[in-house]
Length: 248
Image (tube, rainbow, N blue to C red):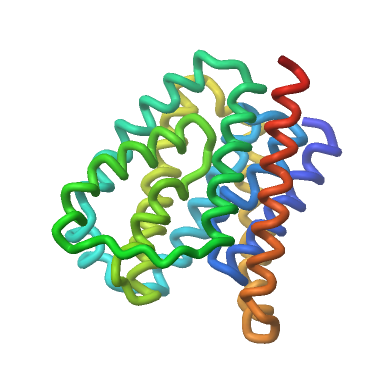
């Protein structure tokens, strides 16, 4: 990798860590768009694995309720892995431009949903039956695009979870997804040594960003910052879709 790509990646790690520390937004969701614009989706996916995994484990350690969360949502987590396998099979048979367009679409849907912040309540009787399909679809979207938030986030937000339990439930999914993605990318020969080294180096700026974001969260209005981040993601998603239409 040339120097420009390394600089872009390190800045993307720092920004994504900052966003995660300030707003709780997923690390991969914030980091991938910048990397995709620089190197393409298939090359960007391995670069977010290690920093994302480390940042997720850091958040999980502070949230608590791990056993309770796994016991409650294990059907969802169980179906994540076959969903990721299915998504990676699709990714292996599509070109990088089309996959980046799919990522752009997911980013747009996520940003619009998060900006609208709809108050949706899922009845208790539907939590367990919907968990497996939500897990599988989240895994499949993750396998194709690298994003880990759809439809997981709307499902979790529709349940009456306190902030710590919500954070733990989401980050358990993120962590399992990152491990499964790493194994899948290795199997598809999409995880080269230089990508692994850069991903490892990205842990430092990612954690630095999380720490800075945590400090900023106490001083800035997190709602305003979150809105700005979502607008940036929406713009990047539109740009990715535009690139697909222009290359068609």
